[in-house]
Image (cartoon, rainbow over all chains, first blue to last red; front, side, top):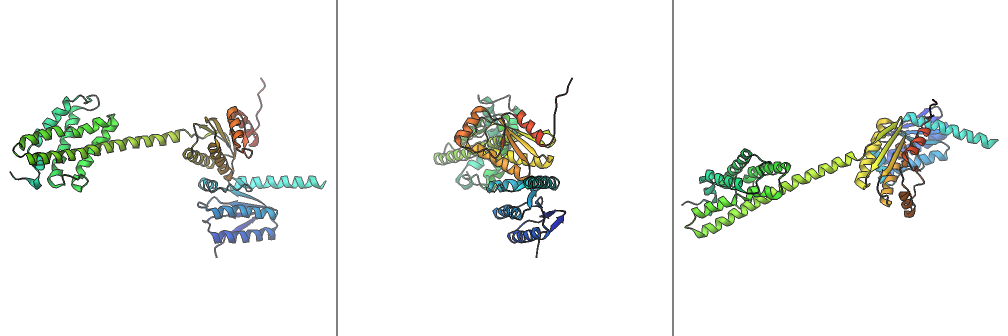
Length: 129
Length: 287
């Protein structure tokens, strides 16, 4: 069966979507990713959708849902590399994904994840005192 | 006298082409509506000769009542061509149509002379000629109109492109100075331009300056928020600047919620905060 690869990169998981998504594929991704987060105790997820050119309301909603699920499992999600056309489509569909952090490319996404984790650590440390 | 399909018209054109052309040209050259500055006499002669020629060919085989048949294609093409050039040269529609309609006079005069003895046939042919030339005249106006509409559409497009520049202020900072009212079509262009520029430059902050937007109603505000949301999805933050006092009042009175977006009164203030966010610092040099 077709699957989206999930790569472990230090404390993070890297999901690169290189094909056009269909409903079954995104459901499989949801299962695989939540399982991997639990198994690897990952602190962050970087979802690269730069090759994704077509989205519908379902895929758009699932991107938001996956980010929310990851947050429940204490992993921050950053979606990177969204194409302009995809962004416009999602906004027109009324899906502006308010809970999802975004970045322009993998590089700045990684940076964002790191600063978010640092901030989280600092907050935890100060509340422990 | 042998008469082709009950009408003398095709025969007339065949026999008296040269005479008709001369009459027609004299007619055209003497009318008050002629614009010597726009059209050279030689050019007018050439156009008239070509039209006469293709008209003669068309009536020999084609229908005399319907100019949409394939036999009339050369005539229509020629007319479309002439009409297009005249629209570009600055003729008005009346002048353009007169070019074709002025052919009536020489034709009808010649018909009357030739068919003096057959009043029935004369009446019939006058009617045919009238119908035919009216059709061709209308077609000319139609093409004229169309070419003018094309010009308008092109200018609208150019205006749309001109009015939405995206400028790079600093490393990672873009500015989008909006001027004029924002409607859906323009928002679409603005959004596409901005997002593409974000991809091209890798910018992380975009400043949307609305100093030049005359009024902000709920629709314009919604369009702005859409642009901000789309930019955010790409990973770039937006700052809205250039909000005039009246605009601030209307926004609040309309109940538009801009709390999700950073707003600044001036572009300068927005630029300062954008520099701060990208990690740049600036100090005044001491002399």
